[in-house]
Image (cartoon, rainbow, N blue to C red; front, side, top):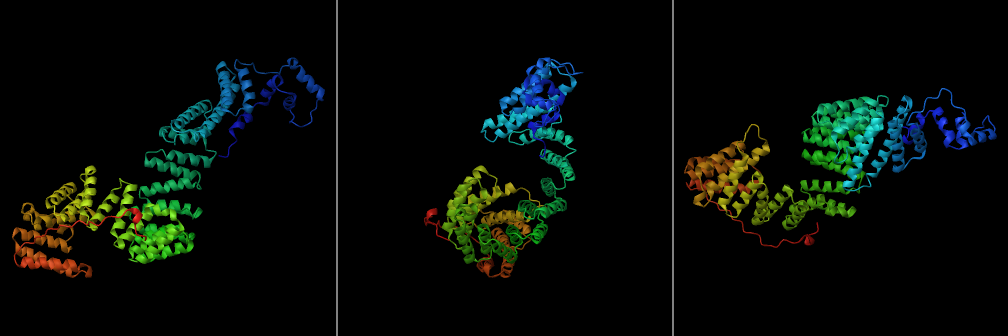
Length: 607
């Protein structure tokens, strides 16, 4: 804030004649020279003897012509003026303030009353500034107490001097601290804005401050518009306005502000990153890509190449992603995060050797990242790719231990236990989750699958039924592809166990056909394993003509798939052969628990 220091402002308001009336009784001869109309250090018209005579007998000085009558509080005002010159400590400022308040209460003429109030506002503001600066050193509850005390003093300051814009702004900023009052921010900034017409930069900053407290998005945007109008170079205002426009899906308006920001500071990766993230959330990858490309054309940077690589990867364009990461590494060969990102991309491309090489290079550059979540996650993925499930499980457990409430991490650990033929360990984890989230569809389905794999068909059916109840009536027109896929998987698995279980008490052919038909409809009859389930349902009801019809369609559909589906095709053909014999299909999945001990993290295989 380019303003005159508050400790000096009151001197600009001093009336020379007023000061010269009180100086003879209080100050030394050198200040008397100042009152005679000459600057200190200049020669005076009167000889030194005259000055000495004047000081020696001040009581005989002639009264000032037409001097105003001294009011009851004049003596305190005169004393406050002198003490104000050197007042710096809180105690000194309190003393000056007390004198000024007393002088106002005892009475002053109109001019001096106005002067005293303005001076008192200045003193109180200086005291509040000192309190505000001490907040950083204060701890705990004391910090809030000091903040509250400073705000009380500031409110007294603006009571005496309603033009004290700095006090209004400090009230607002102090209320931004934890426990502050948003209403006070709005009130204080509104008062400050009204006083700042002659200072557009400060007015713009105050408008941004008020915008932060506006609950109404329209009013917030109005304040930000006014802030940019007052100061087109206020990048904070443009950044806040761009974020607000992105939030309201006004992407074009946001980009207009972003382009101004990036033209002024092409390296501002923080704002660009936020904008790109929002565009990605809005599924506007092309706009995000265009924004980054424009930035790179203005000023190539390692960070922007990394960011664009993420977008290419999201678009499943691994070649372009790798090209950008190679450029990023060329610009910053020792950046461990870029190397880790390239390692993850190499895993996507099934290039485990390159993934391990980049990961090792990143750790060599910065060994401290080995304990970071991102590094543990990448090491886990490498272990999975190399089918070192025990190592992957240990890393998954490390991540769960770091964030026990993270649902994804707990589910992933359960999944790894299942893959490693440890379904009972998976069931333990899933059961603990369901204690807190009994209607979590994904967890119910996953535990149902695990129970099915250990032969607990009744338990699996119970979980599947609970999952279906939690889903409720699915609107196939409104549901997302992910929701349809999740629901079809649950319907299919429940239908399969009701059709094929060796346990007579759990089979229900009619219900199985209904469930499998719904699953087939959700997947547009394009999933071979679901058509296979529908066939099994009809076989359980004794309708082997329908069973053969749908089983044949499943075999034909699987035959069109690539070599990865050959194992599936073999079972589908065996099912069809069974139905051709007018026999239902029976299947009891029972995984033998893996008994190989899980190594501790200290025994992890070096990747």
